[in-house]
Length: 113
Length: 113
Image 1 (cartoon, rainbow over the protein chains, first blue to last red):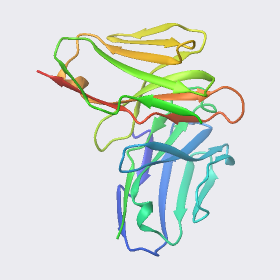
Image 2 (image 1 turned 30 degrees about the horizontal axis):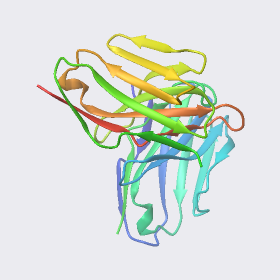
Image 3 (image 1 turned 90 degrees about the vertical axis):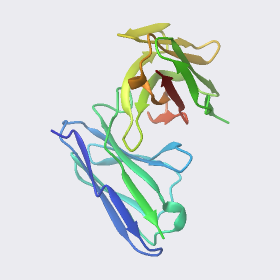
């Protein structure tokens, strides 16, 4: 049973395209996150949702738009992809707001050509 | 500015020895500090959490210390094994404001048989 799942695992696309990454957790957690891990392996928070409500929005270009249809799902849509968007994107969830362990998905490796 | 520093150079140790990894921080008032393990191509996995009022936490061969005066956490793996080879990330949850977790860049540990 996968706790936090992401699709797709790999995504290769051209500059200027629009793409989405999906995340689902079956842990019953209230809070979900999107992180970006760049080529230097630095893991940086992008967004956090608590019960479908956006609570953290770091300085991310507005080409990135998260959507949470319900508390088990948090999707990430990226418009007008740029070379610098190439990275691994991780979804994570936690029972409460940051005070307990985070469960990470397997990651989506995005390559923009 | 806020900084979390981990030794980004790889740490190589002999099997059976104790590995000690360091996490230093500046301009944070962390309520919690967490340690995660990340294997290549996978998402981080939670290992231990220590609160600001705790000095030490143990779990099997793992030990974490937290010194809020020195602004430092040490992560120890005793009787290290080749299977412990991975990147270890420290993460801080700041007290007050939005409860987001901020990750260090991680230290790559290689246990040599």
